Figure (cartoon, one colour):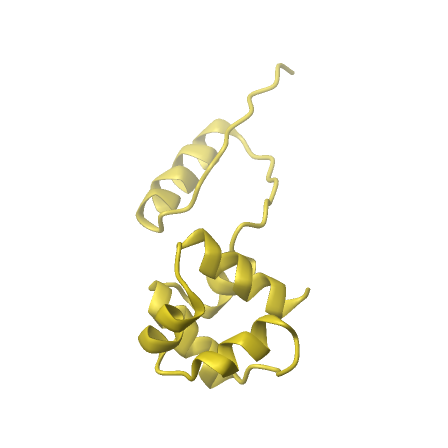
Length: 98
């Protein structure tokens, strides 16, 4: 995983400039630029600040936009959807005949 590219992807999807993110996360804009270009490695503290600016957990920040596929029965799927609904996760359901 390219963390810098991931950070840039999340920032752009939130329609923020580097300056805006830096202000919200309490970081320097040039440091945000270095992170996104892979010239600096973020600490856990830095990732926490950035995730907080987006109101995401660090794990959601790092997996933002990724696609995961799961196969489960309909009752389990309904329970999972109820949980995901409260976590603001985009869900796509494909139903295939047996």
